[in-house]
Length: 617
Image (cartoon, rainbow, N blue to C red; front, side, top):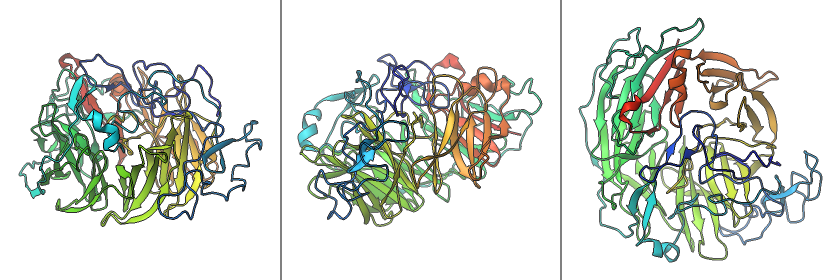
């Protein structure tokens, strides 16, 4: 996986680090003046330049593997044991060290104990690269750091993007149980019109189309079904996390509000929900019955925490239960939380623990706390019937390492544990079912993508000589295991977009059984193409727009021998500039409609910033 010296990786991508980011791109935000928090840059697709957490390159020679030997008792396998894929001294599945690899160079020892790895030495570090992360690097300042390590940080102030947060430990006694709280904020669904509906202020109250985004629409082009102007936001900007599409409603969170629009015509389906403080976390995916949970800040002071929870029915706008997340203990603050849904369980992750709630009632189910001698659960990822926990263990000892656990979502019972060897960090989950994880080794400037079976056994590691750009964005106070959007996975295949500084890129289909490339397909235009989802034996992908040509939604057959994209939707050229200007855009494809929304508002009153667009025929 040799990388050209002048083509470093992108944020969330792979390969050696590179220079600070310019404007544009799907992944990493560009640096901003101190008065503003970090903001992703305009444009959807793969990242153009790395942020401070640019991912390292492939495994360097001699890098110890991240997984302990099979059969080792409990989660504390002795360091230095062989990987789980072959007995010590037995050649691994990728040939023994020194055996010529598939690209004409000797295979390198990989991150799986005795297994040879996949990659070559990388370039030197640079300020902010994995070996010298800025404050709150991939693990975050609190992740897996026991009291001895972060005690000195408790009295410090953490400054992120110009906003100062007090790092506060201890239990303030705020252990309120969620209390049912209903809302009567429902509204009728308006009838469709031929003109895109723009409410002008993001409130969903209907209105005219002063910009006429469908003017001059060419034959074969889809149309803008509706669009929404962003609501007011502070001059320093504001987050707009989450976008959820149901059979009838498109729901979007922005700053202190949650909006709902009819999927077909954009008229309001229910009145906006307004919260007393800014929304700071959301469940990235909805439940099977269209429920989500959002978290908002407890106040505006430096001591405010992201600990106020509210369940919402996406179809009706009805507020369900609400509650407050208590701190987990000393140095285990809810200043930042992660939310994930698995079946009927909501898991709320703090800096060193997690608490599970019944999604329907808000009843506390269990806590996932420190276990063993020194293992702190620091991140969670949920899916249909699956809940994955990642813990940081022995952070101050000689056996510092991560551990991956599969939990029963309903009870928290551990189904299996997989130890990750010292030096390796579980940074992302590309999928939880099947489980595909992305790991980094800062000291070795190495990365690894591994797939696992349902019972926790190693399945394969990616062995493709390529730089990828899965659009993972920022992870400041948490790992954000589910933060990658430009990636898709089905039962047997991982789909990743390649990285390119200009021109067309490719999507590579990688076998989860072997880790090898099955096929690859080039973008049909000179713009980047990224996976969106898989459905019915096909991969749906989004082709980024240019300045004067709208984006495309394409379908790519995943089986057989032909994998050429078929155009499902050609977005109108009249809206290309607006479509191309979304900050780190979130996208979705549902029932023949394509949705794109901003995940960060710039707060500039004169920008006429859009919150969301819907395209269709």
